Image 1 (cartoon, rainbow, N blue to C red):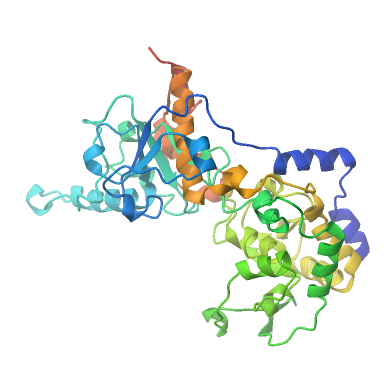
Image 2 (image 1 turned 90 degrees about the vertical axis):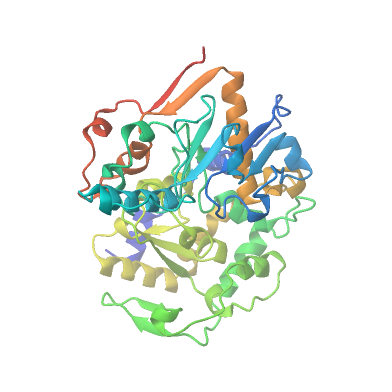
Length: 434
């Protein structure tokens, strides 16, 4: 098969109706103020981590400013565990929770009670079920890939079925989470083409494509090249390649946005970026390697690790190349070489960047006025208000089924699960509140 034939087989040119559908998918979701936003909701971050800033450890605070206050209303954040029994929601990060449970299991496995010693650090101990407020929402948080510790947590003695069924809200990168926090989005990537204050377009599509092509065909200097066994010529950076740099991926976006040159001249001239994950087919695990390092840096991501079906749900056709589209690594290398030598074919992998309006909501009139963390807290508050207004009680029969079991087979490997997890038919339960 020739390179041209391979290209025609892989490329998916969008019809006008398909373009309209993707425009709606990228730009159509809007957050509007709630009618009951004055209803106070207090969120307690059980573990001190990046999700709840340290400065909010004692007094419940509202981090939201300006339009964010309209969107989020009376939404308060705190790390003060003294508020546990009265807090409306408790965010429980699975990282420190798992650390506690693994250490606790090691202690409990000692047959002689006298040798077990005391329980683990109180700061790692999860909240108590016994003193829990019956109307309180527990929020399960995880950002690690689903493969990490997949064979351990659901079989820990300290992770009981009662504890497993105690969570009401899921919060992760998985698209079936109640609060979805991915590593990026197409809209976020393309907002750099607009003025943040006015929402007006900074570069026309023609100007943008012209600049991208000029950048990619610029003579490349200072490269640290090597070749793979399949013959792919790569430029590598970092300690593994003995080529450490002061890379700042955000500068590439600024160079395009303000029509200026970036100091990161090497990477902005790269046509492709290997967005390879350290997890195989872990549902929806598509990290900053895809969003920031590739699409945000004006490169075409060559993807391996994420399931192809997951990537095509969140990224428009022709915005990426997936390694599993090729039978052999040599076929992938052959196709990349073809694109490198054919500007028209290569630029079809940037055509998705035209899926944008001429004007967007200015920053101060959209949810992008919120920081990434604020946006998540805000949505937790809004979800709680919505369920209470509808008089709905909800919980997951097994948060471990959500996190570890309901994933692609490749991510599970040979993990074993308790029988009750496998028997669950409908995990999320929602019933009328009495």
